[in-house]
Image (cartoon, rainbow over all chains, first blue to last red; front, side, top):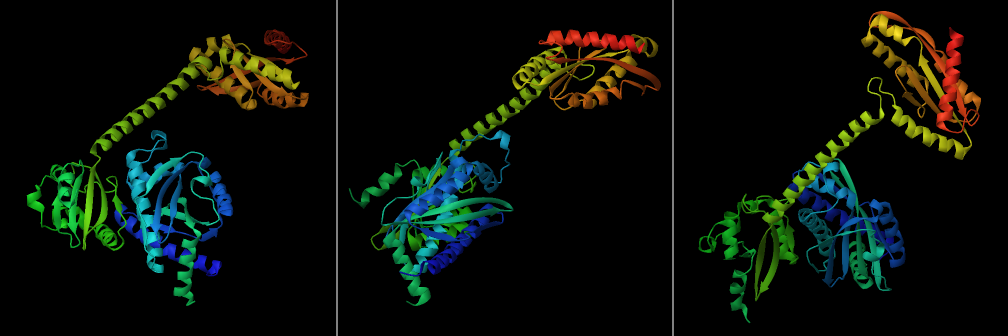
Length: 209
Length: 304
């Protein structure tokens, strides 16, 4: 298996290429300058992953998050969840839709329009990230459209399947729409053999092993 | 069932369904799509998708279709972010899927009409906005009502109702915390003469100035109340040592006799002041008011 530190650097690089493409697509669609970046990727065992994720969830909006998630299968198996603090999402959606945002005048609930907006953004971001990874390591991935959910008191158990054969990739996503920053997180819960396959492939491609 | 049934099934679906080949030539256009778009199937079959739906000419749609052909993973475009996908009359979400039919790849485009959702949500937003404005107005009116109910209209300081509310609260606190509660009785000397000499209008302004002087001389949580025509009460909670009281008293003493300029007149204003303390001078508010009134009267007699 590839050296983890090295491999996680390469994966950070690959995911950043993916979110960079997503940022370009979103900028074209929304007509605003959008920057997306992933500072680093942590590859953790489920126990450590649960601890780190629970810490993050406790910090954001008292654990209420809006989640866009997809399951993927074929050669690689797992689930990707894109998490945003729910209390920031009305402003975020208003920015994407060029609508005025009035904190006093909005309900706390999300409408079907909000859900569809996040479904499209989730589709673009996850598509670009997983697509880039899949292309880079030449391993095909099949997935469906994102499911959207708002979770109160979300905890790591919602996103992480515990088992000896599972690993968790956690990365923070900085979303910047013309100066308004919203920090989200991406959690990839993956079968160990899937990750090993990716890392082996990375090793072959980048380290010539 | 075989593939021959497929068009029949798609004809019954309440979504606009369009099938295109890899080169984007339209091969199927269902009746619901005819309703959404306005063009009959016979007019669009064999034409390029972008010619019939010009909004799909934008680069990100082309890239999405290329990726769909390559990977087979579905793509979603929301009506909210793409307002005129078909025309201005219908808001539609667009889902794109790749279907393998024998050796041929077909792209299926589903146009899901969400115009009704948009109308309902806009209605809801309108109601929420109206309620929010109504709520703001009510809060403002509540403030006005509170002001009228608890504050003296002439001087803006507390009235008797607010005084009573705070007096009971501060007395309970003093009992619980074992601290002193000071109650100051202030009378504006010869106020009738000021009214008679300079007129009621100027007299009212002098009274307002006295209220301001008292407010400026006291602490944030002290309550200055206009008790009667020319009488004020000042509640001084949380007095722990006599030094606490002397600090406030010295500021008020400095204003006890002074001349003020009002409406071009130089008017001599003097105050008679009496102060009582819980628990030494009384255990109830009415006892403290009576005792402070007595001390104030004595002060008035001495100053003559």
